[in-house]
Image (cartoon, rainbow, N blue to C red; front, side):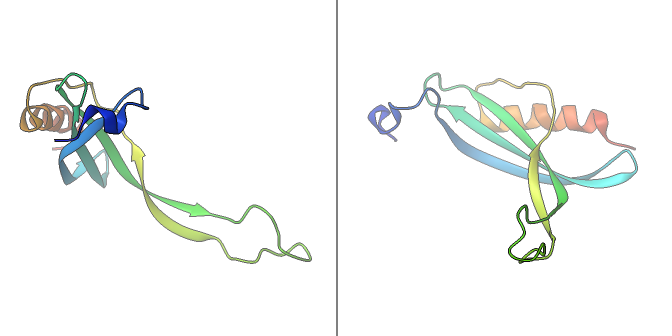
Length: 109
């Protein structure tokens, strides 16, 4: 067990207990969703934090010389916060099941 002194400098601390990733049809697209179950170290309760995988293109901000960029734009896959209703419970499995139920309500059948 992590001692409270290890994170006493922070206002909040969580342990990620379980993570699930699902690929589901939302609207017309197949989306990859990651849901983390985390335990609050000060209360012992569990909640979830959802993410959606997005494709982004990043362009260098400042040109190196002569108005040309030193690198070309690059594509990246990143995790972005995803909006699902709040969950709170006594177990990681319980809050993951609740979050998956909320996600199912958004999925195209």
